[in-house]
Image (cartoon, rainbow, N blue to C red; front, side, top):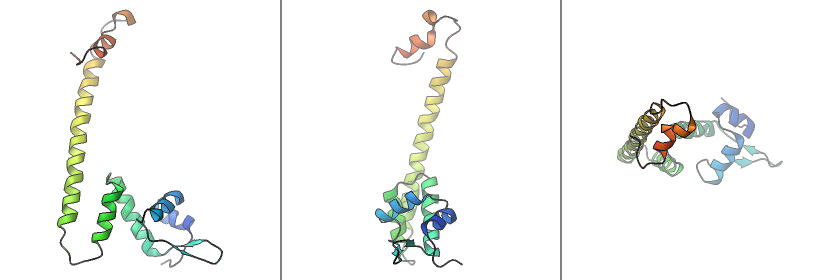
Length: 136
């Protein structure tokens, strides 16, 4: 178990770039690292765990402000999960909305792609459809 490590090793262990680690430190997602006399940051194993947590949240497209909330609620291990549940439910609703929007986009693009049997731009039904409010 590594107790103290430099940022390059933390980046490797956590799968997060050094620049991003510094940013997370600047905005308070990661505690400020202890600095050695030579100015190098020194990190602990707990920082790896925090960064993996943040990385997983980002993979789930959870915004940074909500990640801050999730980190903050972890302080009181006996508190209710209600806030966590609400944040995840909210994120799930966003994902479902995005899926619906992407499905509509896919249908529209498919309709455009299959709307033109012509070989010349002057007769191109796709270009004509794009000039209208809605695809036929």
